[in-house]
Image 1 (cartoon, rainbow, N blue to C red):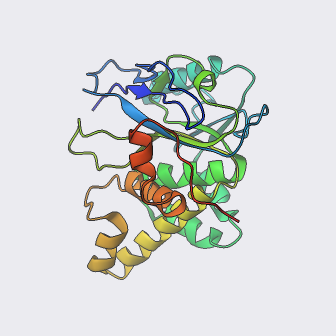
Image 2: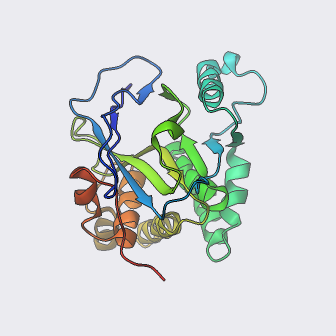
Image 3: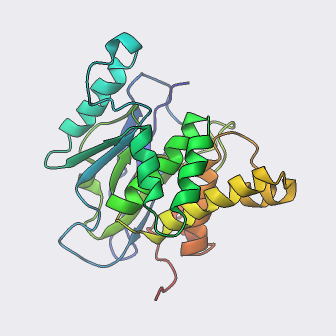
Length: 263
């Protein structure tokens, strides 16, 4: 399935809303548009001239699409799209991890690394593997993650404030098969952001419940979602756990998110 994403950039509580920016992200294979714009969710720490999200572009896949020629295997257009994404974000460093790199990065988590790496190796669904990897990549390095088939139309840093520490988009109800969660095909974060840590731990909680065949716990962790792409729900709930239960309502009302005070 191909989709085109409409992303709107809202003002923060201390700044007026910007003019909506439609078609900020779009699938590079032309597709139908969503009926309404997707809301951005972000957390701003403080006014800061230096970007708190590092100038790093993060990608992952079974193979490194930036290494060698993948046209014979049908991956040429994805490799070309990744290179295009890099080209319109000048001055950035690129990090593309294959399966081994993902497992190693998950393993680097000081407290739960071994369990994360094992869950990654045991997971057959590439979507879930990628979900876990992107969380670990950003938790360790920070930066901006893009799915390999997402085509930004311009440098996204143009609309992301320097003091932003977490940014993503919400899914819409335009596609009922997608659970209400975060559209984490685009995700930006400062290194060590607590939302990423909570999300990784929620993945482990889900895997543990599956291993024990604890249906009640699975429903609690996923809010009853039975579809394979559970990562969107796990990240959304990790954000709510950290930022407070009203965070998404605040974002949808037209402002950024100011989470509860943290030590």
